[in-house]
Length: 251
Image (tube, rainbow, N blue to C red):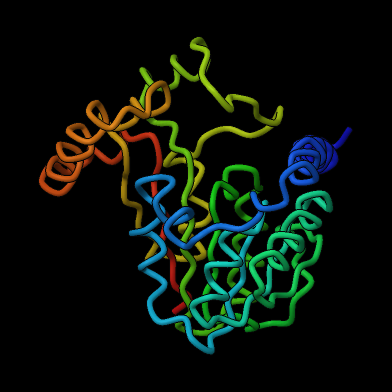
């Protein structure tokens, strides 16, 4: 199969498995903003970069299960959301209905977006860029953003050799991935930086990446505290983190 077909089949299968659990317990589709914003340490600060959302046209880019779409809509954004997986689009629609928000959902390919030029004031994406051919995706992203528009992406990062060894060798929950996806590296971002020269990255979870094997607060809270201090004062440490937030703006 092609790369896109592999991606779609993988995520459709995940969506089908998840759909069965919602039949048994539909209440699981409902959630609070904090449930989403605090499920990983980078989500809330990345989301905050979008600024005021009321009345703005916002694209949830690779929306997956649709939780971000719900939070965006609750904050007053006019939300359009797409994903390559029709299965995940079905789940996102059900989640929007369960949480009583309005958004437009459609199945689409990030490298060939079905939107008019300059359609969006802002774009949000979580764990999506590392699936894409970034030259083509970046050109499409530039096309659909309005001048001055911002895009914020949260992405797994691949510059730490010890973390890469753990990813290859150690068992941990939710380790499954598609055949072609790899965590982003600086070299991967080069085509995107050509299109958006003002691209910035910020790292999250240096020592705090231990939460991949334990979520016990007495373990992760002190490590998160250390991370917040070190990552502010030591240049280059973001390249050793588990995740990065990539921020771009169309000039």
